[in-house]
Length: 418
Image (cartoon, rainbow, N blue to C red; front, top):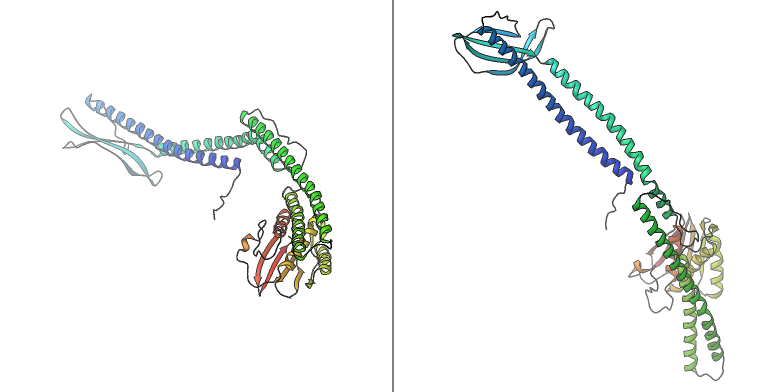
């Protein structure tokens, strides 16, 4: 069985994509900005250190007075020249009673035959504060811009897609049985305008085809009734003739049953078509148990099968009265027709559920085909095979649940009226 994918709204989908893309871009740009500004500040600090070191070397070479200000500037005589070092270091600050971070440049120079070690330091705490301030300011600006763009984009998309959503609602309310033409909202967007044109053309064509098919079905059904009635009458006249032999009588009786079956099939197919086309729009609250009682009374007069009705609760349903009568009639008729022993047909009404049971020799081999048109489990019983199909269509039309089970040699149909 294919799993159904969870659906989300179009605007939420586009907004979700916008949020993720914006978040990733903001995160990446913040990281890039952090390292860029950090390297920029470090370059500036190193440039300042080298500039100070160059001034000191120049002052020493020109025999100008130089001043030491530990730990910022330190000048020492050394015996060996070593390689230049650039590093970060921590130095205690007595005024703050804490360690401060310095950037330290140590160089070795030989000036006028003397070897010097020149150490220049600068406090880099301030540069870190600047870095944090720049990143925080950037984040605040980005968040403000992002919030503005998000709500602006959402509002703009809602306005842009409004004709589409409005027309979608019109499509949901479209009905083949209504003569009102579908009214779609116009849009200055070319694609939406083309979609409106195609939808209007399609709905008009579907409605026209539906009316033609409906008219054809009604005409065929109506026109068949007259010749069938004429044939039926003529066959009955022949059967009543005293000059018939036994073989002729059996043939004519068989023809008469086939004519009756054909007339019944015609009526049921017409009914199925009307149900599928939702032509029964007169919905009202009806008492199902009342129709069951009337149906049992009618069948008791023409059938030798006993029908027991146990009414625990009254069952009410919102549906067409005629379809309620058809539903009850088909359920009882099916139970009487397919019962195999002289055991009572049982009907129970309890807790919004109607149960109809009849005796059977064995469970159905293909219960999944029960509601298929013209399906018969056994060819020994002549029927149209449309009774349960009509029951299923009526239940589907009004959202009732129909179930079948076989227990204790009993076929049971259950209709739950939700």
